[in-house]
Structure formats: structure tokens, C-alpha cells
Image (cartoon, rainbow, N blue to C red; front, side):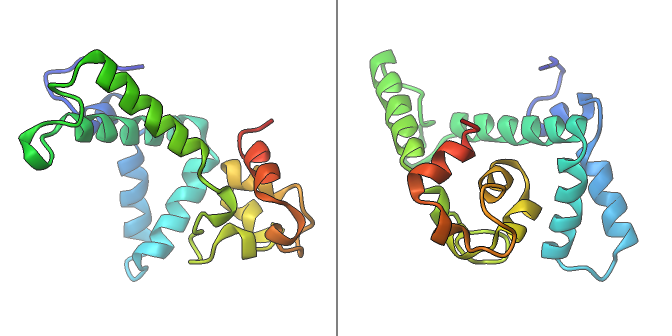
Length: 160
């Protein structure tokens, strides 16, 4: 999946991916010159979600940016992990994993600016991915948070 190149980072990853997410975005911008960023994102994400190769490319691009961000110097001049012992790094990673498990899916803010818990099943289905899995558990016109509790939403989000 990762291809070593003379260049590093997400740009190099994007150039070696089977499909180019940047080209898709450029085509959308050219076809919709007056669209705002929200409209462009919705159009782009709809296309990416429907194509596994594009979705993989987008996720790989994001992952590469996140890894680069972790390695870049932060406040204090050190990367998040550089200079720490293996035990400290492992403890830090474990803490991040614990915090990620505690995220309340129903409190996630959706593209419409509202928490998932007040969105309808129909809107959640449009979002796709884990949100779509949660939304499919309720009828299209039902409010997700009135039907599901946080634990149920978490299970559905994870696909269990």
C-alpha cells in the first residue's frame, strides 16, 4: 500500500494511489465554480464514498498527513513521540485509544451542524459509513437519539 518515493507525505501518497482524489476535487470545482466549500465537500464525499479505490486513497492521504503531523515538532520543539521512552509512548497510545472508545457517537456534529442524536434516520443514511450504519437502525423519519442510546449507537458504529 505504501510506496517509497523520493518525496514524502500525503502528496507523494496521492501520486502513487490507484485513483487521485485531488483530480476528483478539481473536476468538481471546475464544474461548480460558484459552489461554497460545504457544497464542494458534499459532492466530493458522495463520489469518494461510492468508490472503494477513491475512499482508500482518501483514507491513506489522511493517515499520511496524521502520521506526518505526529512526527512534526509541536509546542516545546519535540514531536509528540520523539524523546519518549517506549513505555511512555505505549501509555500515550493506550490513553488515546481509551479516549477514542469513550467518544459518544450520538454527540458527533454532522455536516448540517447538528449532533447526530437530533438528526433523522434519513439524514444519517446520507452521511454513509458508520453514521449510515447507526441511521439504518431507525426509520427514516425517526430522530436517532430518541430511538437509540449511546451504547447501541457505539455498537452499530463499530459494525457489531
